[in-house]
Length: 334
Image (cartoon, rainbow, N blue to C red):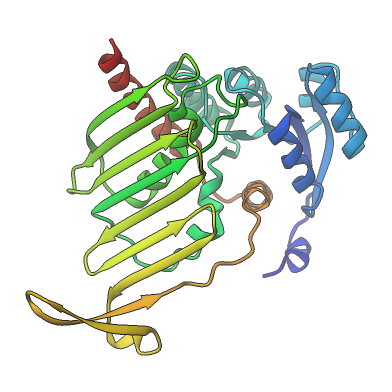
C-alpha cells in the first residue's frame, strides 16, 4: 500500500514535538516534514545555535521549556545526547505521551529499567531508534528464513567527535547487537570482549564474541578510528551464506540449490561428499530511506494502535548486552 493510499485510513493528525535539533535531529525533522498525517508542533533545544539553524531551515516553532511543548503534543521524538534520554523520556511518559527515542534507550541500566516500568504504566507506544532494522539491505531478507549459527560483523567508521560521549559499544556496535538479538532466537550464554580507548576516554575499538544457548556464535568488531567505512554482517546457516552490506545497500545469498532455485545463477563444486550445486541469489534491495521508514513505522503504531517495530524491550535487551560487554572490557582494562 502506498503512502498516499495509507493516509485515507487515518482519522488522526499526530501532533509531534521534537527534542534535540542537532545534527541527527535535523535529519529527523526533514523526514517528518514529508510524512503524512504528522504535524510538527515545535521543538525544544537549549542550544541557541542549533535552535536558530532549525528555525531558519525548517520554519518550526521553538518552545522555551520542555513542559510547554509536552502539553501541546501527542507524541515526541527525542534526539538529544544520550545523557538526556532518560529525563526527557520520563517527563513525556508521565504525561502519557507516545515516545520515539534514539538509541541507546538510556544512559545506564537503572534508567533503562525505570523507563520500562514507566512505559507499562503510561500504556503508550514507545519505539527505540535502531535504524538498521529499516535498512533496505536488511529489509530485503524479511521474507527469508534466517537461522544463523555463526555471525561475523564489521562496523568501522572514521573518527568523528560527535557521539563520543559514549563508548564505541553504545555508539556503533549497539546497532549490530540489536540486529543479532533480533535474528537469533536464543538467550545469550556467554560474552567475551576486548577493547581499547585510543582517541577518547572510553573504548574506540572493540572485538566481541557472543555465544548463545542454541549454539550460535557471533563475532563483532566495531571501530570509530578506522581509515575506511564498513558496515557488514555475514550470516552462516545450514546450507546457506547470507551477506548484508548496510553501507552499500547490497544483499547476497549463496546456498545449496533446490527445486525452487531454477531461475537463479548456479554452478557445481566438488566436495568431499560429492558434487554440489550452488545457487546465487541477489534479493532486490529497494530505495528505502531508513530514517523515514522508522519514523513512519512509529506514526503507524500510534495511529493504528499496533505494536512498535523496535519496542522498549528490544532497546532494553540491546542495552543490557552492550553493558555486559562494557563490563567485560572494564575488567580487562582493570
